[in-house]
Image 1: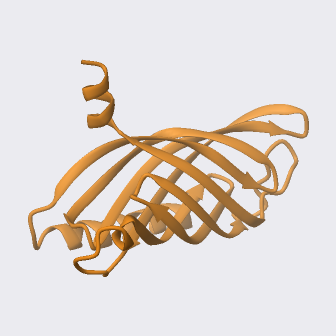
Image 2 (image 1 turned 90 degrees about the horizontal axis):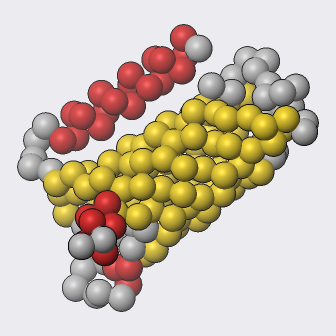
Amino acid sequence: MKNFRWAAAFLCVIFLSVFTQAQVTVHKMINVGYVYQNQSFAEVGGKLLFLKSDDVIYRLGASALMGSANSEFAIMPKVNADILLNFEKNVDFKHSYYFLAGFEATNKYVAPKVGVSLFGILDLTGGYALQMGDAKLNGKELKGLNINFTLNIPTAFLHDMLK
């Protein structure tokens, strides 16, 4: 748990140092998705999207993973940090996808991940999770292949739809 705190503090310092040099726009998003981590989980949470230009986008999020492990319902907290990259200039259609690199952590595992994002809204990522110590969820190990499919819904979009 001590290593998790140091990793989280390090990520916060890196992200905050990037934003001290320029004006950054912050957008709130709600995310829902599916996570496979040696077990299937539904994911519900929120993210903050930090935007200076649309070439490089930073996201920080927190969510809850909910699923059944060894026939028992379980909920795990999850934090994640992503960087979305696309350096195509003056080409609107090619600028609709981003390459994604990120990191996610729960109280049971940590997982670096890579993938693609369509408009920064629909994400497909994969990685490899490393179990934290001997932490298990209802007796089940959560190390190995990590696959995420996430839909990020901007709250401004929801606000406009409900008017």
